[in-house]
Length: 318
Image 1 (tube, rainbow, N blue to C red):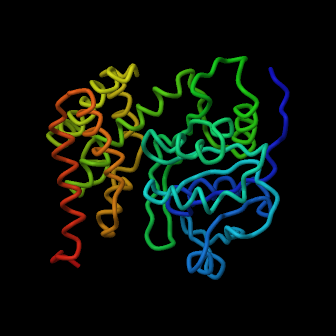
Image 2 (cartoon, rainbow, N blue to C red):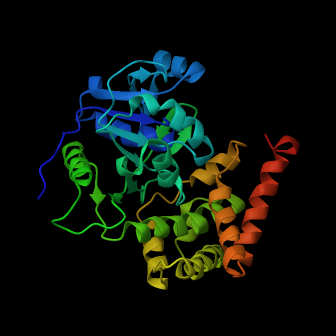
């Protein structure tokens, strides 16, 4: 086993939404608050300083750092913003990055690691994702019942041969009690989560339903499975080995979540915000065109959510 080059003593996070609040609240249970940094700016930074955030009924005031603050680089930088905020977040968090910083991204989709790596250096970025989490955000209040698991690592990981950065993050997760996995094939793990988002996020947003609607046999579940099946066909063309058993695994994960829980895409629709559908159905549609593969279910879901976004100014509902 390789010796650790530097223990993770400071952690910075950008994106104090539902996901960020949920994970950072868990980290703060055992990690000293003076070693935690939340990167935020403008009115948002002032609001967090004045009011903090509430997580499962507990008020927390995390230390807030603005992009221009001069501080030593963080040992670990975590991205939990929405994908349409990633470009600005990369700029805002740049001051937290130094030669020994490790970066993980818990964003949805399959491209954020590439974008962050292009900005900071690919050697600093580990592949990662959040699986089986169910946080809900209302204003500055976040509630969740489970944090699930964080699969992470290099693109390929072999037990006994983990990279130094993987070992550093593994030690940090052990110390903070975060559940994790180190899959041998992280590319497949990222695609598996992407496939789940494509089916579950889009269907729940279109039908305005919680996870419970997908737990039993029926047309809602069938529609999500159809959207995920289109992803497995494209994955084969992209040389990623996704199968029907992986779809079953995704459906089993749903059983660990609160039936009343809501996907991030549904929460965006309810709040009349721009969704991340471009990195879900939009990516599937683009890959379908690239490979000449029909993806009618995802084309339909993508158009319906885009049309929903366009309809926000004309909604007749409060």
